[in-house]
Image (tube, rainbow, N blue to C red; front, top):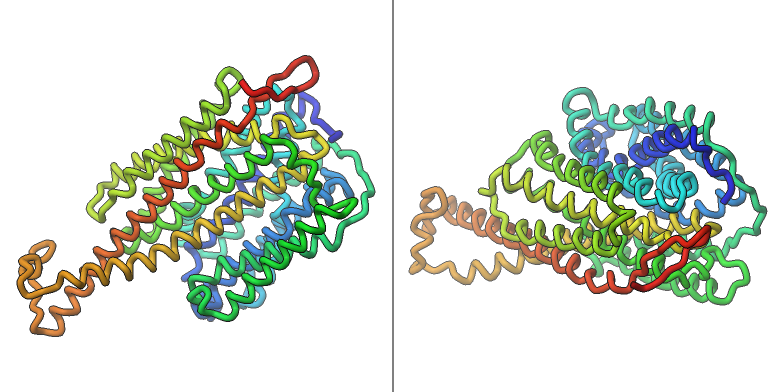
Length: 507
């Protein structure tokens, strides 16, 4: 792709695309903690207010794959500036929304305009730096992608408590203006090619992504496949995926060019980023309610305890950015997976009595591990991919990561509820008058089974213990997912530059 940044402008462009990445990545989680405040202000029910999150997720997921075509058709600079301006404007509209309908509409716009920001940022950085510095570029880009979602709840909680929930959206305004001014002044335009658009491929892929995201987002709330809505969404997703795959294999100019999947690193990299997506946000989705509901932490305290996870990621990325040119990326990915697995192993033994020091330490270790995975993975995935596929490839990379996050969150929340019920039933089997534990409960409480208050207190304690075990099972599952990805490292090829070309060889 044309339009590589000159050396003197490279630093400014890097800062601008980093701001765009952080701005979009923050919005995937920053609004979550503000939902209860929005609910009262917008007169919405619990079911209705969830559409504030769902509308953004579905819109962004559908719009992400089209980034490659739009960049080729209208130019990278023009698309990037439009996306930044649209996302910033939609953020302001979200902040001034006076009704639920307006909020959902503006969040849809925010998701549509925000979708190209992360893949375009990655594509611009890869084109702006020579191949030998791609590792450093991906380290900088990865800080925004990985740290943004982690720090989102902390920043969102602070803004909501200190000011107002509307500032969760207003915070994008100064960042968006600075990003737009910097890119408009220093980002050069790419070559424009007027290729025909594959409407059928786009429609079937959009239906698949939209139906899948709706099913994952509403499945737990609608009791999964006992709901006709979820069954219909699953059927629509399956049919759309089938039609898309058949069309892609038979069309002369498909929406997603299947030639890029012949690159082994790219194909394996997509699977890896799917696993990273599962672990990153699914773990956060578990830890936040764990800290608030089981340990009684306020929103701000929970956010502060989770924040060091992002610090660990940033430190790891700075280290990796310096050594990736001298160390095999596959070794770094292996080290990161082992660190992440170790942190999840420790988390699988958590109880509500765990100290803040242990919470912070495991968070830093897990963040450190994810940082060691993400940067070399982003580098090696695109090391041998042809430049003409780069923008489309980065869009798929972001899409697969987001789908992994959605599936991971839905899976762990479903298993949390299911395992809590199963463990509750198992623990109840041990409730007999001859059980000494019923005489003196935790913290010296005495359960009198002859009174209703005693039975209610006992049931509450059984539910609490069952929930703790269910959380531990979820953390253990995340550990198994991380370890299961280890053998795939052997399938990755290390790219070595030879002259002006890059050749993939298996060491």
